[in-house]
Image: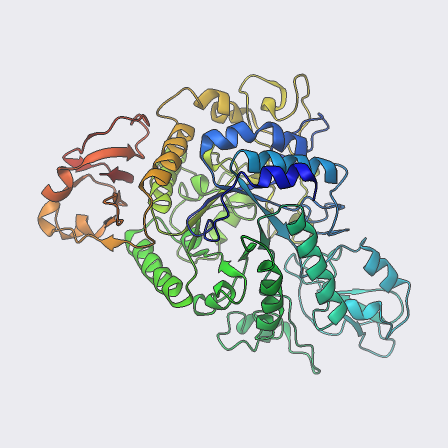
Length: 578
């Protein structure tokens, strides 16, 4: 770590609990800001936009992969875990960025990808050049082929991105890749793999990184005892609650992450980690335990319809889990892997909870079903204010503060996501939420690049102009203004990690209307009311006597002055009352 980084790091209070109720802003670096005009976002671009992050009011940045990569999967195919991709910067520029973030009071969470490396990693190149049974191949998962000539894969397992999960190497063996072929799975039963990742955690922690987002945290430990189960059997038990699935959420992960926790606790304050673990809700606590990673993503709200009963149940269940583990909740609506929630909420409700409707909409080119964009944004704003008021940490995805919608109209020739190429006709992929951000409405590349540059690695649609930062920052009713005001108030009003539900009387609009409304109070007296319904709801006297400090309604100014509560809360609206 440089002396400058050490000096700037002291600006931040050494608070071991800073993460518990932090607002964390995810930056997908290749699509955030481009300083050199090559069409790819970079570290200097991020550094140049730190004043924007300060004004937005976030506590930390989660930086998606920035390592050397061929971009077979948007940077999640890592060539070198302890370096920066030259297309987006250098280690020196990383040090400058983190020093500037810390000086501004913003912490950094780095994405780490432990389940697989890239096929360009020096270890994998060595494995391909080594014989069967070699130590080099032992770092990955190689198995002999089946059939008389060893030319058939060891099983019928399918990759997450489509096609076989086994890739032949030409000598009768295959390697496992649960994602793209360019992402060979590492063998976490190998002590050398474990030790190398401990070195990686220390490498970035020593440079000032405050924590880690752990990609595919539930996938590291595997049981490949023969005979291998069929793909159908694996799918049928994917969300096992017993820790016995061969590939996902195994008990051996406890030992792996206990070693990580030992490394995290070497630092003051301890480094933190948040698991991306798509597991049964009753298993999530294993990753969030203080002896493990400490926090785990809760994707339940992300998968929910805009529905009062669903939101209520999800909050209750996850508050109980947090109390059991001593962790804090994580709340999220959008990220780099899913259709943006301003678009999802404009589609008909999807009770499959499998994103089938969003996938179908993308496959249609964004034509069918028809998106009600105004309703989608109205619901997204209301849901966001509900989320930001909850106890725990809030994870925001770049561009959601602009109300950005998903971009469906990307030509096939310009798509990048491997799921599009490997699942042709089944999935379009995730490029639509990764389009470079619009900063200036009337500038080339909407200000994504420097003045005069019109390059962007994914095409930006013309309608981005109305979402640009420049089009919103002076408008007190804009989505950007609402986010800025909400995050400022969140710091002011935040108290203990508790909430108390408020029972709404039938007389305040009838039983049916009351069922569509959720109200809760935080310990500081901060009261939140969300009308999930399609008709106004008359506020009971106890709430009507409070002041509105923030409203999600698009015609409500996000200024500093409080106003008396209205007689009724409009449909699909959230009010913050005090």
